[in-house]
Image (cartoon, rainbow, N blue to C red; front, side, top):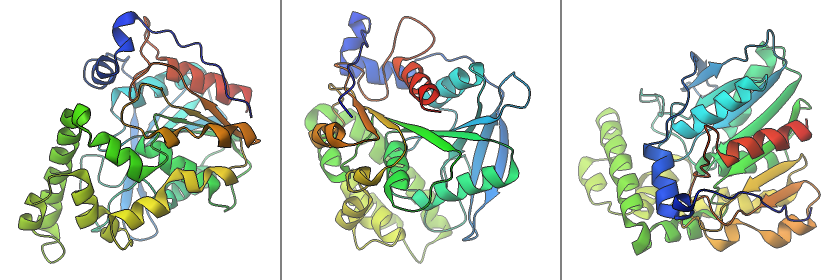
Length: 321
């Protein structure tokens, strides 16, 4: 498909990627929504929690599934904002809390990662078997976007109810995007992620002292070191590089066969250039790419309650459903 021309024109203050990224993450006010939590027992004995919000229109037949980013959850402003926008448009929403992200440590040593498409597959199977939806759509943010794109392009059967998907601020090349995030200009962001991930690993080490120790965790001062110590090996990979290489969405986008939109801001300093694969989009029947000049990482703020990404996700999914 041809590249999509973007008409996102933010307020001048939010043309700065730092301000757009930080304000959207820490200061954005979103309308409150009523969420109902449901625990999904997974086939491997673990669990994840789904937070449901419902359209005011009775018995909606449409469901939007949302996946959050690294160290996120269903209460993050970008998830709540997207859920509210779809609820108002007549969609029910299932916001997934990936393993260990709902406020309670998951049962197994493994947790979540950018390639854990088996969990999304299990969620989709569950909601379709236990609800009467005839239309399904997906939206994934950052790490969740990579996971979603991998699921779509793995070559496994996609349910006919799944009509369209949108990925936002997505690191389609995990290793090169990690290197971008660890650049000096992104020091504060990477430090924040490292601190939060180490805190989670310290809790996990108390539950699994035979698998990981406090001393090992405290030696990790980079995201790569954390992925090499824990993420890769805990999820069946040889090491961090093996995890990045086998899980990056770039490997799977060519095989996507439903309408899919990737929205990556050109000024998103978290993403490697090849995370926005222009040539692939031009040649692909189903993969659409939109590259606004601004937006930061999961920002896309406007002078209204909705973000540009929320509006584009709903418009694209509605058009293709």
